[in-house]
Image (cartoon, rainbow, N blue to C red; front, top):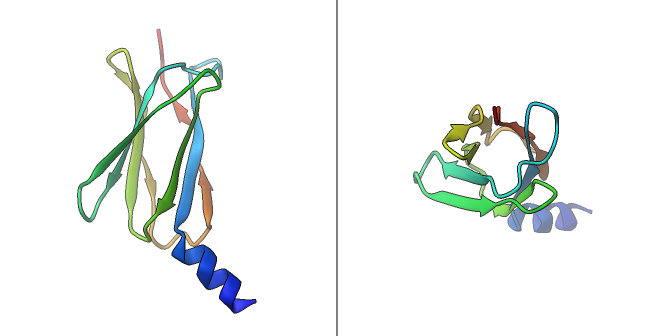
Length: 97
């Protein structure tokens, strides 16, 4: 059983969620920015029709994530290295009006 847990951990964590407007509708074509706070490396993801984003294989470090659409930005959310869940789900809200 331990070998499976270590194998899953080696593959990294998954951060996913949706980009939503103030009425909980998907914000199509929003860009999600994920910053590794240790290296300051940035990954981006352009959401599709359902507003979903995915960042698989994340290292066990702190990350900051936010979404941007048409000059508007969501609040920045953090993913802690001490959060040991293999899958983290965060919805990002953008006020589109």
